[in-house]
Length: 228
Image 1 (cartoon, rainbow, N blue to C red):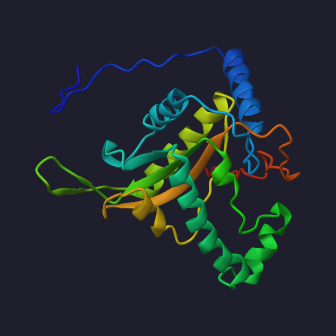
Image 2 (tube, rainbow, N blue to C red):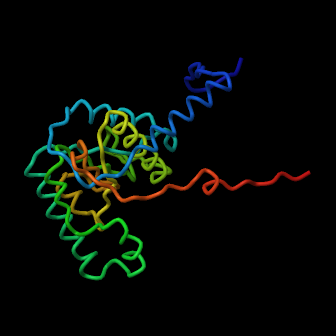
Image 3 (cartoon, rainbow, N blue to C red):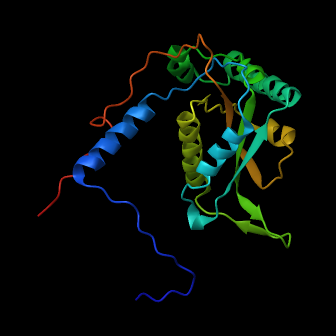
């Protein structure tokens, strides 16, 4: 029996035979491979409970020291969503039209046909902004430093996206740069910084996405030979 100085509980994850492991893995890959980032949304209402479930899924992500350094700001108010659109477009116009995006970046984005137009932010029923907590305010007013913040928040956002996809919802990892206006509009404290803006809703009936191919497993894998 191991001796611990802090509370531990038993963990016995499900195990499967090889055939079932492979079947489940293939099904999961097929499910995720159907996910696409969307810029054409329906204005059809989405239950708030779906957003809460996606955040609950994000909360299951691993994090440095289990400090969970994220906060999800949920915006459903049309006026606030419009304020976010206006502010995002102001920054994006500088990016696309003011030369802040270098030529090689613009060339990379060309096949996606993105622009400074972020009208979808007025269409979606929800905007969710994930904030990364550089530190966390404690009940006594002090700040606790967080660790591996970018890594932890990135994984949580991935879980959030997967959960939305599982519910038949679509989103986009929108990162207008700079994003300081989100701190002001969402009235978040200085120990948080905006990480990703997620428009959340149903894909429009006439939605289109770029015709892109993903890396194959072989392209994404580096085999490291063993040594005797």
